[in-house]
Every structure is written in structure tokens, then in C-alpha cells.
Image 1 (cartoon, helix red, strand yellow):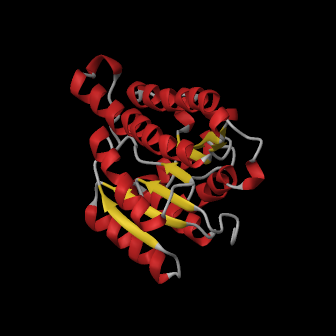
Image 2: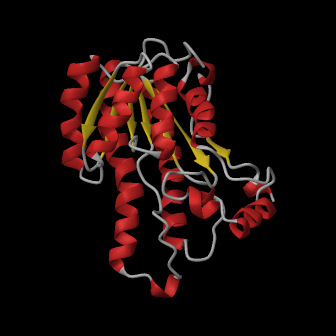
Length: 253
């Protein structure tokens, strides 16, 4: 992927670990300068150090992206560091393993899930799309989920949040086309992270995934990078409003 994003200036959110960390490394390896954002301060600084050690150019910023004012505050240091914003990889979010039967949900769980997934997407999308519009264009790639298409027991709140992100992508794509901004998403399947690898490696869990996923396994975070970089690159110049499922065939089985 070397050079596919050469000279571009990118924001990557949720980059302290998992898919976001892989995106940070992959986007930088493709030639982009990156501003990396996460509420995990030590984690995001470590990620930036890894990018720099690999020869990339990176700045780490600690922020809670569910707060609109915090996202607005990111713009000035990002512009000071990069001079502009061409790309946004809005990855922050996740379920945190919160499997809760629907009848046991309460407002705090529901609102927390929406804040972590939908509000972060909206806040980052609005702030950085406005900047891209001022500059004359750009590309935005959200991280949705395979559960924007299907669901599992106990994950109605997560599926609803990620389904809303998928619709946000479509709405933004229509409204922002006149400003030269493309908006797309990747929808990862079950993916190893530092927090879940042990669980998904258990024989019974691994066997269940072999039955449910056409490719028969859980993904590595790095396997999400190719689709995201493609959507941000000039190779996808006629692609907007689309979600690419990177789920090993889960949604077709």
C-alpha cells in the first residue's frame, strides 16, 4: 500500500489499540501524515511512537470524542501539525463486550452505547467535513460493523448504533458530494483485539466462529486496513455512500 495516500493529511480516531491502531500504522505506511486521537492517553502516545519509529509522521491527541466541544478543540492542533485535513478515519467506538438481553437494557447502557459509537461518528464527521469543505474536498471512512446488517442475541443496542452509523454514511455522502467529499465505511467482522484474543481463541468459541464465518476464523486488525485505505484513495474516486463488509463472509452465511 506504499504511496497510495502519499502527501495526504489524515485523522485516525480510536487509534490506541485494535483496528484503530492497525489503521494508524497502515495509513501512515501508505504515505499519509497522521493525527491520532483516543481517550486512552498512554495508548495513543504509544501508537504515535510506533508510527514515528517506522518512519511515519504522527501526532497523538487525547480526547473524548463523544463530546462535540472536545472534537472541535482537535481542529487547531491538527491544522498546526498538518496544515489541513484531507482524510478522516472515524474508527472510535466498539461494544466493549456489553452483551445485554433487550429486556435488561436501561437508559444508561443504551445512551452510553450511542455516545461511544454514533455520537463520536457524528461529532468527528461534522467537524472535519466542515474543514474539508473549506479546503475543497476530502474523504471520510467510518468504521461500522457486520452487525449493521445482522445481529446476535444481547447486542440490539450495539447493532442499532452501528446501523445508524451506516445510515449516517449514506446521508453524509448525499449532502457532501457537492463539496467534493466522499463518505464510505468499512464493516468489520469479529476481530482480535488485545482484550478479546484469549476469549476468541478458546476452542469452543473458535469452533463457533468456524461455523458462522465462511472463512472459518476471526480476523486480525491488519486485515481491515486494505479496504479502508482503498476507500480513502484516488482508486475509489467514484465510490461514495458505500459500506464494504470485511467480515470473512459472516453476513452471507
